[in-house]
Image (cartoon, rainbow, N blue to C red; front, side):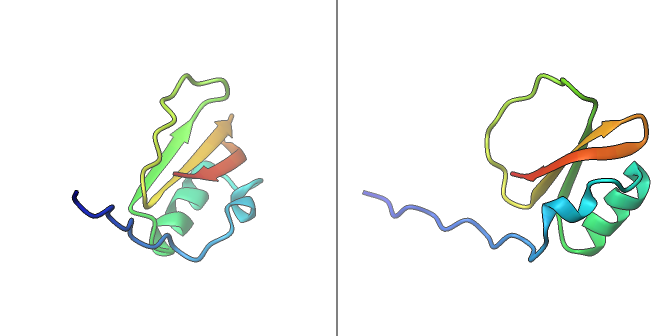
Length: 71
């Protein structure tokens, strides 16, 4: 049986620190902190829930981040 792969380490960051920031500022900060994929979504978006290492997700209402999670 093949070994289970070890996912790469996530950036050492606190997702809640992005809540309240404007979308562009949050995206720039996330990239500068090592996130390889930054995804901004409107509230209520239908998305798949697969975990992607190195991805941070923002729910953006207007131009403000209202929720943030990794994967």
